[in-house]
Length: 423
Image (cartoon, rainbow, N blue to C red; front, side, top):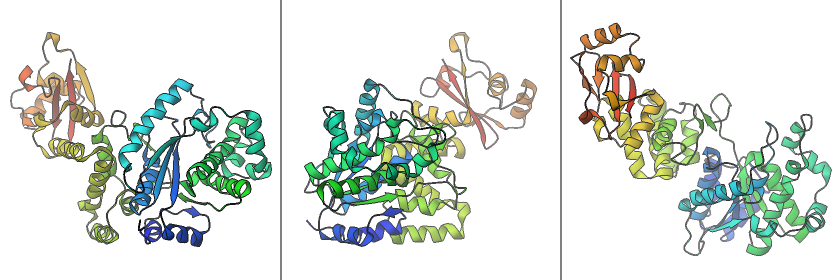
C-alpha cells in the first residue's frame, strides 16, 4: 500500500501538531509505510463534543493517507476520567459508563472506514483491564513510573494544593498501559490526542521504551480556543455536542456560522478537508470582504455535513433562510423548527380552549410589551404570522396555521421573532 508522504506537512500547515516526539523520526515512520496508530475517547459524557471532533478528523486524515486506525473507547478509563484543573470528577456507575461507551462508539464509527488494507478497528480498554489484578498492575506497569515524573505533570502540579485523589493521579498509568497493550497485541506505534493529554501520551511512549525496549511515537493536537483565549468547548446552551438530540443540527450549523472573523481560517484548516489552495483563496476573499461571511458559511456547511450529513445541513440553511430571510416556514420540519425557535425563545399555550389572537400572542412572546403596543405594531405593518403580514388585530390563528401540527412563528419587524407551541 502506498502512503501519502506529504501528510506531516499538511498536519503542520493545518496547525494540528502542537507537540510531538522526535519530529524527524515521526516523519520517517509515516513515510515508510502504513503506521498503526490509536486515539482514545473516554465516555465521560453521553456524547462526544467539539474537542473530540479534532481527534476524529485527525484520525480520518491519517487513514486517508494510508495509515491504520485503532479507535479506543475507554470503558475502563471512563470509570475514572483524566485529571482536570477544575477538580475531582464525579465517578459514574458501571451501567452509565457502559451505556455511554456504546453511544460514543456508535458516534465514532461513521467517520472511519472499516474496509480495505488499512481498515479501522474499534477497541475497548475494559477488555484488558477487567481481569487484571492490582498486584500484577503494580508489578508490570507501576514499576516503570517514577513518582517524581508523575508529580511533574502539569495538571497534577496544579491540583496538588487543592487536592487530587490517587484514583485520578494514577490515570496516566492506565492510558500508558493502553498504548503498551496495543503495541504488543496489535503492533500500534503511534498515539495522538489533545495537548492537555501530552503527559499521558509521552507516558505511553516511555512505558513502551522501558518495558519493550522499542520506539513509539506521539503527537498532540492543539486545544481550540476563541480569539480571547477561552475554550470553544462551551456554548450558552452547554457543550458543543455532536449528538443531534443534545445539540440539534440547526444550532450546530449556527455555531459555526457565527465564529469570529479572527478564527475562521484556523477552524477551516482544522475541521475541514478542503485543500490548502481553496482555504487560502477563501481566507483572502474573507479578508477583503469579511461582511459577506463567506468563510463562515463554507465552514458551517462543511462541518455540519461532516457530522450530520447533507440533508440536515440543507434543513439548517432552509430554516435560517425561512426565519431571517422571510422564506416559507411552513416547509420546515417540527424538529428543525423547534431547534431554530429554541434560540429565539418560545412559549407554550394550551390549545384546548382555542388559540389566542395575534395581539395576545405578540404580548405572550415578549415581541410587544403590551396589547396596545401589539396593536400599533400590526397597524404599522410590522407584525407577521408564519412570515405573512398580519393586517387584522382580531386575527385568531386556526389549526391550519399550525406548522408540523404544533408551531406558530411570530415576527416583529425584520429580525425579532419567537415561537409559539400549541399543545
